[in-house]
Image (cartoon, rainbow, N blue to C red; front, side, top):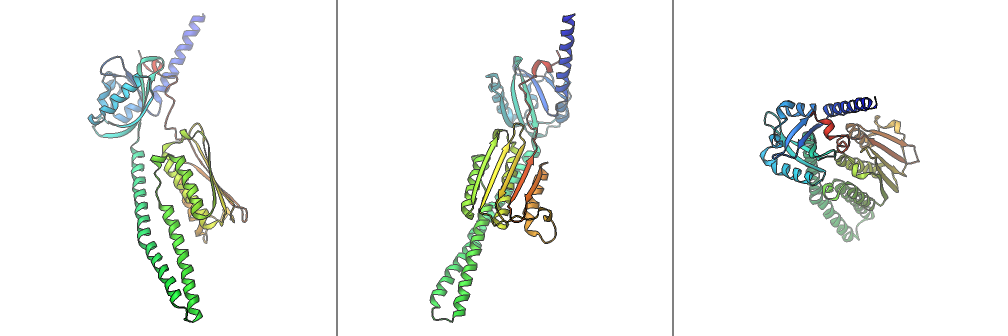
Length: 360
Protein backbone atom coordinates (compact mmCIF):
# COMPACT_ATOMS: atom_id res chain seq x y z
CA UNK A 1 0.00 0.00 0.00
CA UNK A 2 2.81 2.42 0.96
CA UNK A 3 4.63 1.62 -2.27
CA UNK A 4 1.52 2.32 -4.34
CA UNK A 5 1.01 5.65 -2.58
CA UNK A 6 4.64 6.57 -3.19
CA UNK A 7 4.33 5.65 -6.88
CA UNK A 8 1.13 7.69 -7.24
CA UNK A 9 2.73 10.71 -5.58
CA UNK A 10 5.81 10.35 -7.79
CA UNK A 11 3.69 10.14 -10.94
CA UNK A 12 1.67 13.19 -9.89
CA UNK A 13 4.88 15.14 -9.26
CA UNK A 14 6.25 14.04 -12.63
CA UNK A 15 3.08 15.23 -14.36
CA UNK A 16 3.24 18.61 -12.62
CA UNK A 17 6.84 19.17 -13.67
CA UNK A 18 6.10 18.01 -17.19
CA UNK A 19 3.19 20.44 -17.39
CA UNK A 20 5.44 23.24 -16.15
CA UNK A 21 8.10 22.42 -18.73
CA UNK A 22 5.70 22.17 -21.64
CA UNK A 23 3.87 25.42 -20.86
CA UNK A 24 6.74 27.61 -19.68
CA UNK A 25 6.48 30.95 -21.59
CA UNK A 26 10.12 30.81 -22.71
CA UNK A 27 12.01 28.43 -24.99
CA UNK A 28 13.56 25.44 -23.20
CA UNK A 29 15.79 22.76 -24.72
CA UNK A 30 17.01 19.57 -23.06
CA UNK A 31 20.29 18.50 -24.70
CA UNK A 32 22.13 15.18 -24.60
CA UNK A 33 25.83 15.84 -23.87
CA UNK A 34 26.89 12.19 -23.93
CA UNK A 35 26.94 12.00 -27.73
CA UNK A 36 28.90 13.90 -30.35
CA UNK A 37 27.58 16.14 -31.64
CA UNK A 38 25.30 17.00 -28.71
CA UNK A 39 21.67 16.41 -29.70
CA UNK A 40 18.27 17.79 -28.75
CA UNK A 41 16.32 15.48 -26.42
CA UNK A 42 13.23 17.59 -25.77
CA UNK A 43 11.70 21.04 -26.32
CA UNK A 44 8.60 22.80 -25.00
CA UNK A 45 5.66 24.43 -26.79
CA UNK A 46 7.18 27.91 -26.70
CA UNK A 47 10.17 26.60 -28.64
CA UNK A 48 7.88 25.21 -31.34
CA UNK A 49 6.06 28.54 -31.57
CA UNK A 50 9.21 30.69 -31.76
CA UNK A 51 11.25 28.51 -34.11
CA UNK A 52 8.46 27.21 -36.34
CA UNK A 53 9.48 23.55 -35.98
CA UNK A 54 7.49 20.82 -34.27
CA UNK A 55 9.07 18.99 -31.36
CA UNK A 56 9.25 15.83 -33.50
CA UNK A 57 11.27 17.73 -36.14
CA UNK A 58 13.77 19.01 -33.56
CA UNK A 59 14.27 16.00 -31.27
CA UNK A 60 17.27 13.91 -32.36
CA UNK A 61 18.90 16.71 -34.35
CA UNK A 62 22.27 18.15 -33.32
CA UNK A 63 22.12 21.42 -31.40
CA UNK A 64 23.89 23.07 -34.34
CA UNK A 65 20.70 22.50 -36.36
CA UNK A 66 19.27 25.85 -35.24
CA UNK A 67 22.54 27.79 -35.11
CA UNK A 68 23.91 29.79 -38.06
CA UNK A 69 27.52 29.20 -39.05
CA UNK A 70 28.76 32.49 -37.58
CA UNK A 71 27.43 31.56 -34.12
CA UNK A 72 28.69 27.99 -33.86
CA UNK A 73 31.89 29.02 -32.10
CA UNK A 74 29.74 30.56 -29.36
CA UNK A 75 27.70 27.34 -29.16
CA UNK A 76 30.79 25.14 -28.77
CA UNK A 77 32.06 27.50 -26.08
CA UNK A 78 28.74 27.12 -24.22
CA UNK A 79 28.96 23.32 -24.42
CA UNK A 80 32.55 23.25 -23.11
CA UNK A 81 31.79 25.56 -20.20
CA UNK A 82 28.60 23.74 -19.20
CA UNK A 83 30.41 20.40 -19.25
CA UNK A 84 32.91 21.95 -16.80
CA UNK A 85 30.00 22.64 -14.47
CA UNK A 86 29.46 26.32 -15.24
CA UNK A 87 26.12 28.07 -15.72
CA UNK A 88 26.53 30.17 -18.84
CA UNK A 89 24.61 33.30 -19.88
CA UNK A 90 25.45 34.65 -23.32
CA UNK A 91 23.93 36.58 -26.21
CA UNK A 92 24.22 35.01 -29.65
CA UNK A 93 22.07 34.31 -32.71
CA UNK A 94 19.90 31.44 -33.91
CA UNK A 95 17.53 30.85 -36.83
CA UNK A 96 13.85 30.35 -37.51
CA UNK A 97 12.49 27.56 -39.71
CA UNK A 98 12.42 29.98 -42.69
CA UNK A 99 16.13 30.66 -42.23
CA UNK A 100 15.86 34.16 -40.78
CA UNK A 101 18.41 34.83 -38.07
CA UNK A 102 17.46 36.52 -34.81
CA UNK A 103 19.30 37.47 -31.59
CA UNK A 104 18.79 35.47 -28.40
CA UNK A 105 19.92 35.37 -24.81
CA UNK A 106 20.96 31.85 -23.80
CA UNK A 107 21.16 30.53 -20.24
CA UNK A 108 22.59 27.01 -20.07
CA UNK A 109 23.42 24.72 -17.15
CA UNK A 110 23.90 21.04 -16.39
CA UNK A 111 20.81 19.09 -15.41
CA UNK A 112 21.30 18.75 -11.63
CA UNK A 113 19.83 15.23 -11.76
CA UNK A 114 21.81 14.03 -14.79
CA UNK A 115 25.26 15.42 -15.66
CA UNK A 116 24.90 14.03 -19.17
CA UNK A 117 22.16 16.54 -19.97
CA UNK A 118 22.10 20.29 -20.41
CA UNK A 119 19.08 22.49 -19.72
CA UNK A 120 19.04 25.53 -22.00
CA UNK A 121 16.71 28.52 -21.78
CA UNK A 122 16.55 30.70 -24.90
CA UNK A 123 14.95 34.16 -25.04
CA UNK A 124 14.28 36.12 -28.23
CA UNK A 125 15.81 39.58 -27.65
CA UNK A 126 14.99 41.13 -31.03
CA UNK A 127 12.89 43.88 -29.44
CA UNK A 128 15.49 44.50 -26.74
CA UNK A 129 18.23 44.86 -29.38
CA UNK A 130 16.06 47.34 -31.30
CA UNK A 131 15.59 49.38 -28.12
CA UNK A 132 19.34 49.31 -27.54
CA UNK A 133 19.99 50.54 -31.08
CA UNK A 134 17.51 53.36 -30.63
CA UNK A 135 19.08 54.26 -27.29
CA UNK A 136 22.56 54.28 -28.83
CA UNK A 137 21.30 56.58 -31.61
CA UNK A 138 19.76 58.91 -29.04
CA UNK A 139 23.00 58.95 -27.02
CA UNK A 140 25.00 59.78 -30.15
CA UNK A 141 22.61 62.63 -30.97
CA UNK A 142 22.83 63.97 -27.40
CA UNK A 143 26.63 63.99 -27.68
CA UNK A 144 26.48 65.77 -31.05
CA UNK A 145 24.16 68.45 -29.67
CA UNK A 146 26.34 68.92 -26.59
CA UNK A 147 29.42 69.39 -28.79
CA UNK A 148 27.60 71.86 -31.04
CA UNK A 149 26.41 73.91 -28.07
CA UNK A 150 29.88 73.91 -26.53
CA UNK A 151 31.75 74.71 -29.74
CA UNK A 152 29.14 77.11 -31.14
CA UNK A 153 26.79 79.11 -28.93
CA UNK A 154 28.79 78.75 -25.70
CA UNK A 155 32.02 79.92 -27.34
CA UNK A 156 30.26 82.83 -29.01
CA UNK A 157 28.74 83.96 -25.71
CA UNK A 158 32.08 83.61 -23.96
CA UNK A 159 33.66 85.80 -26.64
CA UNK A 160 30.90 88.36 -26.28
CA UNK A 161 31.37 88.40 -22.51
CA UNK A 162 35.06 89.11 -22.97
CA UNK A 163 34.30 91.97 -25.35
CA UNK A 164 31.68 93.46 -23.04
CA UNK A 165 34.21 93.45 -20.19
CA UNK A 166 36.66 95.26 -22.47
CA UNK A 167 33.99 97.79 -23.49
CA UNK A 168 33.19 98.43 -19.84
CA UNK A 169 36.86 99.10 -19.11
CA UNK A 170 37.23 101.46 -22.09
CA UNK A 171 34.03 103.34 -21.26
CA UNK A 172 35.27 104.91 -18.00
CA UNK A 173 34.38 108.36 -19.26
CA UNK A 174 31.01 107.29 -20.67
CA UNK A 175 27.73 108.38 -19.08
CA UNK A 176 26.50 106.31 -16.08
CA UNK A 177 23.58 104.77 -18.04
CA UNK A 178 26.07 103.19 -20.44
CA UNK A 179 28.00 101.67 -17.53
CA UNK A 180 24.74 100.31 -16.11
CA UNK A 181 23.80 98.82 -19.48
CA UNK A 182 27.19 97.13 -19.87
CA UNK A 183 27.00 95.69 -16.35
CA UNK A 184 23.51 94.38 -17.09
CA UNK A 185 24.85 92.79 -20.28
CA UNK A 186 27.63 91.11 -18.27
CA UNK A 187 25.14 89.68 -15.77
CA UNK A 188 22.90 88.39 -18.57
CA UNK A 189 25.84 86.76 -20.36
CA UNK A 190 27.03 85.09 -17.14
CA UNK A 191 23.55 83.65 -16.56
CA UNK A 192 23.27 82.45 -20.18
CA UNK A 193 26.69 80.78 -20.08
CA UNK A 194 25.88 79.07 -16.76
CA UNK A 195 22.61 77.77 -18.22
CA UNK A 196 24.41 76.45 -21.28
CA UNK A 197 26.98 74.69 -19.13
CA UNK A 198 24.18 72.97 -17.22
CA UNK A 199 22.58 71.95 -20.52
CA UNK A 200 25.87 70.53 -21.78
CA UNK A 201 26.30 68.62 -18.50
CA UNK A 202 22.76 67.19 -18.79
CA UNK A 203 23.38 66.10 -22.38
CA UNK A 204 26.75 64.56 -21.67
CA UNK A 205 26.46 60.79 -22.11
CA UNK A 206 27.73 58.42 -19.44
CA UNK A 207 29.28 55.09 -20.41
CA UNK A 208 26.89 52.81 -18.53
CA UNK A 209 28.30 49.69 -20.18
CA UNK A 210 31.83 50.38 -18.94
CA UNK A 211 31.03 51.78 -15.50
CA UNK A 212 27.83 49.86 -14.69
CA UNK A 213 24.64 51.63 -13.66
CA UNK A 214 25.29 52.06 -9.93
CA UNK A 215 28.84 53.53 -10.23
CA UNK A 216 27.65 55.71 -13.13
CA UNK A 217 24.74 57.04 -11.09
CA UNK A 218 26.94 57.66 -8.07
CA UNK A 219 29.37 59.64 -10.22
CA UNK A 220 26.65 61.54 -12.07
CA UNK A 221 24.77 62.55 -8.91
CA UNK A 222 28.00 63.79 -7.30
CA UNK A 223 28.93 65.75 -10.43
CA UNK A 224 25.39 67.15 -10.60
CA UNK A 225 25.63 68.45 -7.04
CA UNK A 226 29.02 70.05 -7.69
CA UNK A 227 27.85 71.57 -10.99
CA UNK A 228 24.75 73.13 -9.44
CA UNK A 229 25.98 73.92 -5.91
CA UNK A 230 23.63 71.38 -4.30
CA UNK A 231 24.21 68.82 -1.57
CA UNK A 232 23.45 65.70 -3.64
CA UNK A 233 23.43 62.20 -2.12
CA UNK A 234 22.93 58.79 -3.71
CA UNK A 235 22.33 55.51 -1.89
CA UNK A 236 21.30 52.06 -2.95
CA UNK A 237 20.03 49.00 -1.11
CA UNK A 238 18.94 45.50 -2.02
CA UNK A 239 20.12 43.13 -4.73
CA UNK A 240 21.62 45.44 -7.35
CA UNK A 241 22.90 42.44 -9.32
CA UNK A 242 19.24 41.52 -9.94
CA UNK A 243 18.45 44.83 -11.66
CA UNK A 244 17.08 44.01 -15.16
CA UNK A 245 19.33 45.26 -17.97
CA UNK A 246 16.27 46.70 -19.72
CA UNK A 247 15.77 49.10 -16.79
CA UNK A 248 19.27 50.56 -16.68
CA UNK A 249 19.13 53.32 -19.30
CA UNK A 250 15.48 54.31 -18.52
CA UNK A 251 16.34 54.60 -14.81
CA UNK A 252 19.38 56.70 -15.58
CA UNK A 253 17.30 59.05 -17.74
CA UNK A 254 14.50 59.24 -15.14
CA UNK A 255 17.01 60.26 -12.48
CA UNK A 256 18.62 62.79 -14.83
CA UNK A 257 15.27 64.35 -15.68
CA UNK A 258 14.15 64.35 -12.06
CA UNK A 259 17.30 66.10 -10.83
CA UNK A 260 17.27 68.62 -13.68
CA UNK A 261 13.63 69.38 -12.85
CA UNK A 262 14.58 69.92 -9.19
CA UNK A 263 17.44 72.20 -10.17
CA UNK A 264 15.27 74.33 -12.45
CA UNK A 265 12.13 74.68 -10.35
CA UNK A 266 12.56 73.58 -6.72
CA UNK A 267 15.01 76.19 -5.37
CA UNK A 268 16.42 73.31 -3.31
CA UNK A 269 19.73 73.17 -1.46
CA UNK A 270 19.83 69.38 -1.16
CA UNK A 271 18.60 66.31 -3.04
CA UNK A 272 18.71 62.62 -2.20
CA UNK A 273 18.38 59.74 -4.65
CA UNK A 274 17.60 56.30 -3.20
CA UNK A 275 17.44 53.14 -5.33
CA UNK A 276 16.26 49.75 -4.07
CA UNK A 277 16.23 46.53 -6.09
CA UNK A 278 14.48 43.47 -4.67
CA UNK A 279 15.47 39.84 -5.21
CA UNK A 280 12.96 39.46 -8.06
CA UNK A 281 14.29 42.48 -9.97
CA UNK A 282 11.58 44.93 -8.89
CA UNK A 283 12.72 48.52 -8.42
CA UNK A 284 11.80 51.31 -5.99
CA UNK A 285 13.30 54.75 -6.66
CA UNK A 286 12.98 57.88 -4.53
CA UNK A 287 14.07 61.42 -5.51
CA UNK A 288 13.63 63.83 -2.57
CA UNK A 289 14.46 67.55 -2.34
CA UNK A 290 14.09 70.22 0.33
CA UNK A 291 12.84 72.87 -2.09
CA UNK A 292 9.78 75.08 -2.37
CA UNK A 293 7.34 72.26 -3.19
CA UNK A 294 4.06 72.57 -5.10
CA UNK A 295 0.53 71.20 -5.32
CA UNK A 296 0.78 67.79 -7.11
CA UNK A 297 -2.87 68.11 -8.17
CA UNK A 298 -1.89 70.95 -10.47
CA UNK A 299 0.60 68.91 -12.52
CA UNK A 300 -0.48 68.73 -16.14
CA UNK A 301 -2.96 71.60 -15.88
CA UNK A 302 -2.84 74.70 -18.05
CA UNK A 303 -0.32 77.22 -16.76
CA UNK A 304 2.07 74.69 -15.27
CA UNK A 305 4.32 74.16 -18.25
CA UNK A 306 7.25 74.06 -15.81
CA UNK A 307 6.18 70.53 -14.84
CA UNK A 308 6.64 69.14 -18.34
CA UNK A 309 9.63 67.24 -16.94
CA UNK A 310 7.39 65.43 -14.46
CA UNK A 311 4.97 64.45 -17.21
CA UNK A 312 7.89 63.11 -19.24
CA UNK A 313 9.07 61.06 -16.26
CA UNK A 314 5.55 59.67 -15.79
CA UNK A 315 5.45 58.61 -19.45
CA UNK A 316 8.78 56.78 -19.11
CA UNK A 317 7.59 55.02 -15.96
CA UNK A 318 4.26 53.99 -17.49
CA UNK A 319 6.06 52.64 -20.57
CA UNK A 320 7.89 50.27 -18.20
CA UNK A 321 4.67 49.21 -16.46
CA UNK A 322 5.56 51.11 -13.30
CA UNK A 323 3.95 53.73 -11.07
CA UNK A 324 4.85 57.31 -10.11
CA UNK A 325 3.68 58.86 -6.85
CA UNK A 326 4.37 62.59 -6.33
CA UNK A 327 4.43 63.72 -2.71
CA UNK A 328 4.77 67.46 -2.25
CA UNK A 329 3.32 70.50 -0.54
CA UNK A 330 4.11 74.17 -0.94
CA UNK A 331 7.11 75.04 1.21
CA UNK A 332 7.77 71.41 2.20
CA UNK A 333 9.87 69.98 -0.62
CA UNK A 334 9.02 67.17 -3.01
CA UNK A 335 9.53 63.42 -3.25
CA UNK A 336 9.06 61.33 -6.39
CA UNK A 337 8.39 57.66 -5.60
CA UNK A 338 8.79 55.35 -8.59
CA UNK A 339 8.20 51.60 -8.67
CA UNK A 340 9.01 49.26 -11.55
CA UNK A 341 7.86 45.61 -11.61
CA UNK A 342 10.13 42.57 -12.04
CA UNK A 343 10.64 41.85 -15.75
CA UNK A 344 10.58 38.06 -15.30
CA UNK A 345 13.34 37.81 -17.87
CA UNK A 346 15.16 35.00 -16.15
CA UNK A 347 13.87 31.92 -14.36
CA UNK A 348 15.52 29.51 -11.97
CA UNK A 349 16.71 26.69 -14.22
CA UNK A 350 18.75 24.82 -11.63
CA UNK A 351 15.84 23.52 -9.58
CA UNK A 352 13.21 20.90 -10.38
CA UNK A 353 14.38 20.45 -13.97
CA UNK A 354 16.15 17.77 -15.96
CA UNK A 355 14.80 14.22 -16.16
CA UNK A 356 11.39 15.34 -14.93
CA UNK A 357 11.02 17.18 -18.24
CA UNK A 358 11.94 14.34 -20.54
CA UNK A 359 9.63 11.66 -21.76
CA UNK A 360 11.59 8.43 -21.74
